[in-house]
Length: 217
Image (tube, rainbow, N blue to C red; front, side):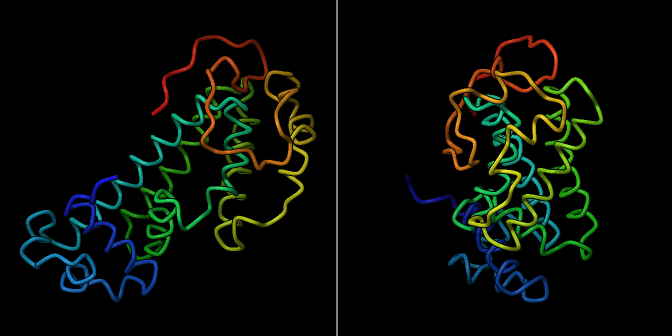
């Protein structure tokens, strides 16, 4: 992979400062220094700290949409993917997670970041509604995914949880019995490779399935 563009370097530096030192440490000079670009080079892409925030929000939502496309095409089913990767993807080596953590560092300080985080979380619940017939069950799946992700963010991606240790039982208690969702050949530990993909027909409705999957992001 080639060197990231200057704009991406600046956003990476902005994220790094937020994660490591918090909002108080973020100045245009500090971001430029961390990105190893001139002040003028930074200003060419981002005229102000508010513009940097807008860039972070755009990146957060773009990466959320991209991961949702992975979920739609996951061989293990969209909901299994959602729940398992809510833990396994809470990894600072993953760019999408670093962006989320940077945004979380702004929680309560930047209303636009609060709104973007709420939107990002809501997008996953809306995706669950596409695959689950019962609206309340879809909401529960979204809340479980949110909780797993935030707990893993705090405790680390190697945390153990009964939710992932016995996903078929979780599905049973949620009233989901479709064998194509439980996955007779799928792993139940929640440790499957999050890079795998599937057609949407292996998704997670509680009733009949319809439609074909989309291509990978």
